[in-house]
Image (cartoon, rainbow, N blue to C red; front, side):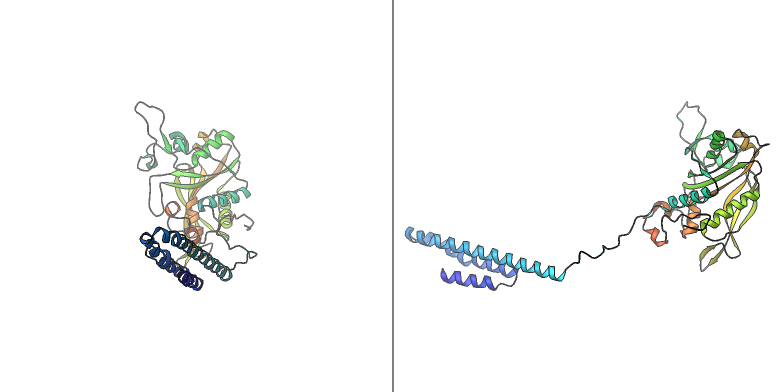
Length: 354
């Protein structure tokens, strides 16, 4: 037994790693280890021999197990010390930069638009997204036969059988907010109406739900010249460059005269440049508020006049941040914002600052 003790204590002391320790454990006290085999011989001994050999073998087994545990702990401590030396970290160093979250481009652009028009004295007005047929169409001089009132273009709310209330729709524009604001506040008035609108359309530049901002200014002597100045100031502040506009005659039921508005631009290596070049890009519809719309809002058209316009927030966000597909706003991971260089909380003003 003394030979076994000396042998294994020496081998354990010289073991270089945990694998070697495990091998020695198996050789010494494993099921077929040397000490385990000797303990099986106790059954063949006389009672007197077992009385001497049994305690000695148990003591040897305990001593070997203790030596194995101690060596294993020593090796683990040595490995930890080495790791601490090689992976040393200076806790006084600054922390690694963490990517910050950002707001959605639509929310960002809504803030930008609101800030620019606030500088021009426009308040922000809001209204319900489910509107009566009257506010969404009739009050805006949109006749019953107009294509916009067809179910293929407009989402009508469900009516149970026997429900004879007037039709309600998911608003197709934020113009109903203009009517409600004029009813509530009268004239003069100067507001913008940002919000979600709904139309039955879906492709690269159209989605069933999109975001729009409309503007309205009513006073005694407002003209198309005021409209043109307002829009040019807005686009120049929004795009950060002096932007010229071009008005083209058009027709909208709620304005007369009406105009499509183009902004000056150019294409350089497939990239849109707003405010330079000899190209033009259509961006919105506008015009002088139709007298029938003023009458519907209980404002005397013989005393008051004004302009209105509407532009898609999604569309101008795409133009400013170079996003090619409107559907990306709704079905993409927000990581794509960084791909397009979007940086949140840049709010332009009429004075050129952010």
